[in-house]
Amino acid sequence: MISGLACHGLCEDAVTLFHQMESFGLRPDERTMTAVLSACRNAGWVSEGFAYFNSMRCKYGVKPTIQHYGCMVDLLARTGHLDEAEEFIRKMPIEPDVVLWRTLIWASKVHGDIDRSERLMNDRGVLKMDSDDCGSYVLLGNVYASAGKWHDKAKMRGLMNQKGLSKPPGCSRIEVDGLVHEFAAGDSGHIEAEKIYAKLDEVEERLKAEGYHPKLSEVLLEIDNEEKAFQLRHHSEKLAVAFGLIKTSPGTEIRIVKNLRSCEDCHSVMKLISKIYQQDIIVRDRIRFHHFINGDCSCKDYW
Image (cartoon, rainbow, N blue to C red; front, side, top):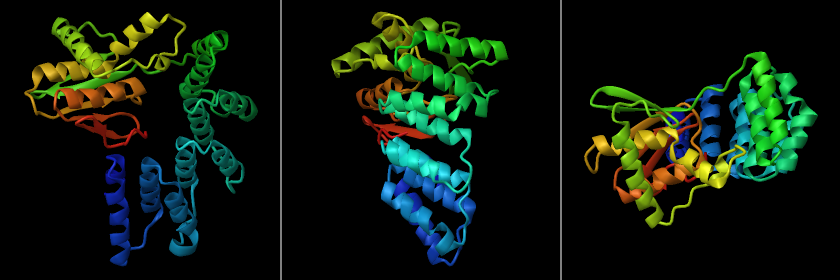
């Protein structure tokens, strides 16, 4: 329950439930501590997270595992405490895995510290640590793209091809009247594609009236800005939500499941759509649940 609350952005409720559990004399175990640390991570509560982490062994008799250290690294990195996150990893009493280093590399990219991302990639030999996982190659390629190093990004793509690795394509699913409809980016194969793209045109005009500007930095391709805007406009979850707006009545909740992390542009668009159309939207991406209600998200723009 604590984990579920944290995943839905109800982090205060998650922590309250943790303390209620304690008051009933129930002793937290490894999984419980992972759940409460996840709540702190999702909420961006650095001091609270460290308070729970530091009390694990002495108060609860729980030895921290790589999952607990991972929560703390993610918490520090996402909140922009990059120096502290790197120092935390280097001082860990257990060997950090590739996931921890990738977490810090990604956060460094998000916070604009491309130099740190590149240094960590080279120093830690991320590809050697997990050479058969496409995630490492995609991450490094995205870092190079953010730095405008398109040749190096192309090299990552070449290495992936040599190893027969491929990134899973992004797709979003929505259920309407008992049927699940799946959309890929730029999808034109749906039977109602013409109506969906017409709805997208309408949505885009209303978004612009609210001051929306596409986040072109989310498109890590060497193409012009017009093409970047076109790419963003046709992301899978935007197609899914357009279909949802067509098929549902005003005030009806729209639920979407996406297999990848939502990009910042799609996240901003979902917030605006929930406000403009007065329809609640729930998106389950690879990271967490996002509840978009009247222009706000349950993740508080932290995911």
